[in-house]
Length: 395
Image (cartoon, rainbow, N blue to C red; front, top):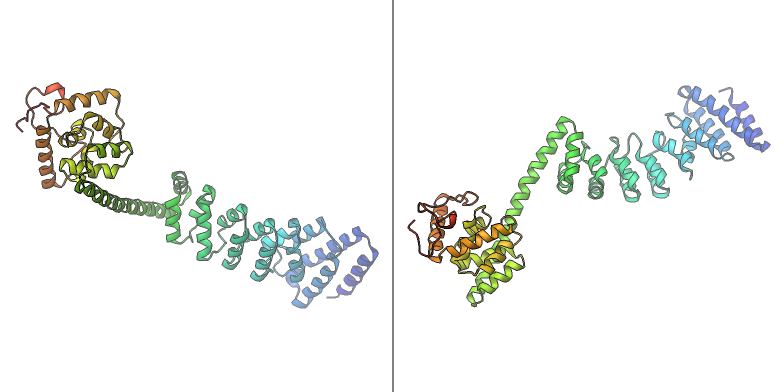
């Protein structure tokens, strides 16, 4: 490399002259020479450039170094010590180009920089075309929101299992991050499932809209599984809650404390499972049937178990006002229910309730929303769904 002596001589002049402009001019000239023929230099020649540039940049700052970083960053065989020095510069404008692009930086270099430099440096590392899991672990440990977003959107970033867990955890409170993480094809299924489980409906919809057809099918499959599992878990919780409530109601009954006052208190305090259990024991019908009746669209469903239990209208009204019962009732609907309740005999209500129990036991079908009136006389009293009267009707 015949030019080397003259370059070194020029370097010495530039350094000794003390002229900033001369040093910058020499830096640009040497950089031009290297970049122009970089693919032709062997290792020994590159070491010479490394030494020359290394001496020169000690006396140069600011824009000239940022320009050098930008020019050397994409060069695969750039002088390695110069690259490392630029990457560790506190000025992110100087460090960022090589942090984002230079293949001369090892994972050890990147980990050391990620552990010691500021967020701008971390964002630049997170944007590299390939980022190893050991590096992303450090970035996720020290990085801010911009670092997380840059990593999540970078298809070349690779994550450890713990890294994916960390990403998903942060995504729970960041919808944009949730979308980016959810669209990653390398996201483990178990973590993807947890992400969708905690995601808002807006995020779920956005993921389905942004995903390619294959990913969209994956999302839909997971959402279906989540829905089924959620329903199953809710069913198990409901069974446990109802079993505990039934035990409490049974204990009240055994001590003589299961009475109208207890029912009224449960209705007023929205203790739904306990209310069902208590009403079930007082009217002698299974909890499942009582729940079905109270959730019915028909008035007789709400009124008959209460009438069989012998409750006063004030207690029945409290039950109908419970926030878990059927749907909110208007004053007009409550007035109509009150009229029907006073028209209904306890014996007649008991007869109907026993019939529903037999029919439900035989068919194992849910009774309500289609509670079909049993055979009524030709002219039902008060226009009610059933023939309500003080004397039991023939059914």
